[in-house]
Image (cartoon, rainbow, N blue to C red; front, side, top):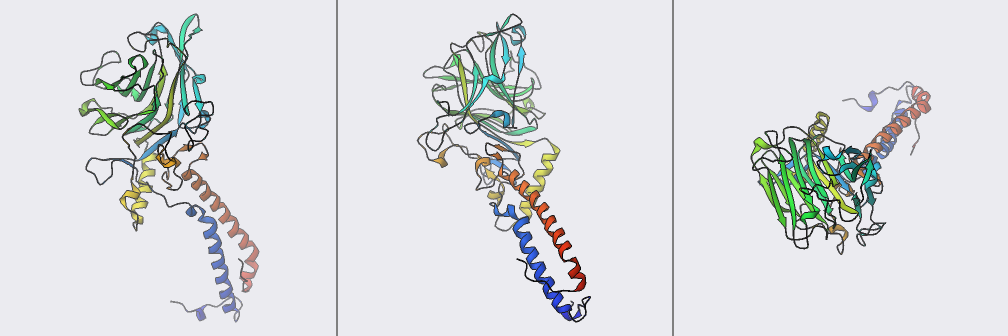
Length: 427
């Protein structure tokens, strides 16, 4: 190993002073770079790099999913700014819609009503419960002299969802004559479906239609045996907020309501084989055998959230996951498995909004800034980019600042470097 006396500066006897000064410069520069380049490190240490699990990973029955999509509709003021969702616009004439009325899906039927302050109560800025309203007006409209009923449909922008747990906070309309659908969709033969008909709800009961459209047969009008059931809930879902959920793993597809299991299919030959996307819809076509309608009044389906935790079929997303999870595991140290894979809260009972503390409101990883739980995920929140995206921007900014500092110092002190001059303390 070299000794300091072995180092000869361009100025001979002044070499030791040059070395001491150069060391001070390097220490100062490294200190500055650590403050600038490591700005993201000031954020909480990341967690959930290896995904999100249904049940703890220590339990025999658990499933881990790599990606997430979370939409807290109680906070969203402008859905057009949310890149997770694509509100639809299309028309089906009465023949194609299989009813006496056609269906016309319109952007005007999607109405945000964000909360004034959820820590105080659930009221939206326009009154009523905060959330996103999907409307079906009572009165039809005329299109080319044919009558259409207006409805609403939201599709996820991502169509790479393959296996996952999918959840929605909702309250149905009190007016009979509409259909609320929440489903994963690839095509008409690969679909995991939940549909609630407002005409099938009363003061004491609500029926929930659960359907699996399969690649081996069956149609929208005639499901195969073992792919369709009707579950009965002992209350009216238009009275309060509830949660619908379905989980799809390689071994089973299971449907839940407020965290309670309704039905499971384990015949894997019936399962979808391609990736797809999530659809939320509220509509009517006047068909007395299904939606009924037109609704007796202007009907609103209220949505408070959608949460999807899933595996991606996209090779780029898969590579991202492998990189971040591999790095987390390689870091070791005090990072436990429970920090790398985060358990998804799955409470039993309806989502609670009024009369609860802030930490008892429905949980979102993407709203949990302190936890930094969406590393390398593409998520939206009403304040702008997610913490993970903001950290990435800070990293990019830090690289630019670092480059400017190094170049600037080089230009300032290059003459003195070649002259072997000592450097003062810079910072």
